[in-house]
Image 1: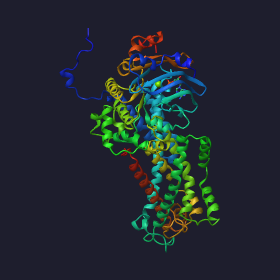
Image 2: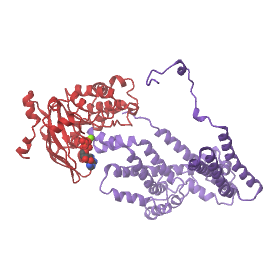
Image 3: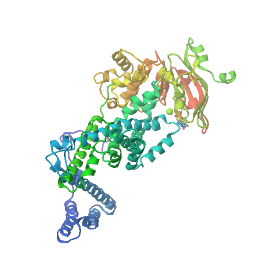
Image 4: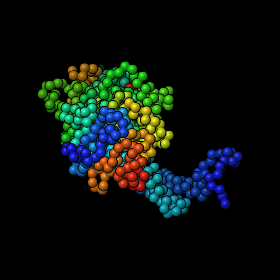
Length: 360
Length: 278
Ligand SMILES: Nc1ncnc2c1ncn2[C@@H]1O[C@H](COP(=O)(O)OP(=O)(O)O)[C@@H](O)[C@H]1O
Ligand SMILES: [Mg+2]
């Protein structure tokens, strides 16, 4: 009879080394999986090389079904019929991931290939006064458009971020009677086409002479587009803050305003930063509102109220279809610069928003 | 409220006269009934809480103990549809009077919840000081407050070298003691605790019980617990709640803890404290 629960350490168990028994696979498993990966690939390679069916079509109507079939057969062979579903899901998931990565990469690649020629230090800080579409790439740049885009985004954020967060707080924490209407309004607002936002600012402000086409007007148009994104995302993240924290703060004798400002929003800080980023991402490439509300300019404009201002989307729009190769390269270069700007902004925000615990 | 109704329950005040010198009451719930929407969950609760004692509220799940304790610091009213009748006296005044500010009441009547809820965006020190900051109290001796409240909560030795670490890094038991320290920092006169140990390991539970016994020398404590031994260990008085199916909960019996546990007058109390139901 075995004795249960005795002291079971021995010299033998003390000398044990870490192993991974679950990684041991029989040879036939390794070989069949290798075949399932290599065979469909070879078929596709042959088709791509020796037939003139378009590549994309080969991938979709030949490779994917073939790979699914191969994975299914291997699964049945190795682990029985019940594992078919598993293997299909793995193949589809990997396929979908690769597909979206390929698309993303080809967008980036085409930007880099066509735009890299324009990138240089002076391209980033000089403006385009005295520059014609036919001027060679050694001269001029998009400094004015960078400054313009930056100003417009700043103004839009200053307006839309506080209002958006306040709207979210109204929905999640004030829980007033108008919540359903506010929600509906925000939802409706997120359906406003960007060109309509631009037209709106143009007609109520610019055409009436209230103020010029300017960074401020462009910022207002952008703010209209940013607001619903910020509000809805912020609402989602504020909802994730456990009610325990709110009750806990109230039980300490806190006013509701302090609960929101000192407990709820700090607890949701990373999420709030994401909300702001998504808001910026929503508008950063929008061209139509700026064509209408901000206009264009070859020089650098720092005063946000004064006069029409350049921006990267409008610059791209104006240059990309011109019959001068250098102008087209400049357009692609500024698109690339915009992407880099977005990447820098997002990285910065992530670093700032990292789960650091605040001092009291 | 009619006098007859009030006398139908033997009140603590009367028992205090029998057993010891009368003390002032910290709080006094009188003929309290509570509703969620149309549903009445508590009916005619009369409990007096003498100053600087610990009162245990016991009873099966769902009989309204949490609801009752949340009426004592006006948290109940935050739930949509909540309603209440009767009165809760604090320092002789009804906390539900129209001219009473609930924020002030919650400052004086602190609360510790079942689930530890330290503020994740703050450090350990920040959590202890958060009550002062949230309630807008100005104090200069921050370090002294942090040390004394964490000591009272039995946590000081474990965290004194890492006061600026995130509160979320602490274990569950430590977090619970941290929120006790947080509640103490605003110097409440009454501390409500709703099953403060139900999510904790035995060692942390014992530490918190020690803390409660120590605290009840200075603060009035009202604690909900499902642990009979705990009620015996920490409380001076006990009230037993019960709710029949689809009926509102009420207090079946209350009195000195020793009496309730050794010599209950009601059969249901006897059954409950001996673990025969609930
Ligand atoms: N927020 C609420 N809304 C509606 N009913 C509630 C709510 N909270 C508790 N109740 C009901 O009130 C009764 C008492 O609950 P509770 O006070 O939590 O009991 P206990 O703490 O004694 O277990 C239960 O029947 C419960 O379903
Ligand atoms: Mg409860």
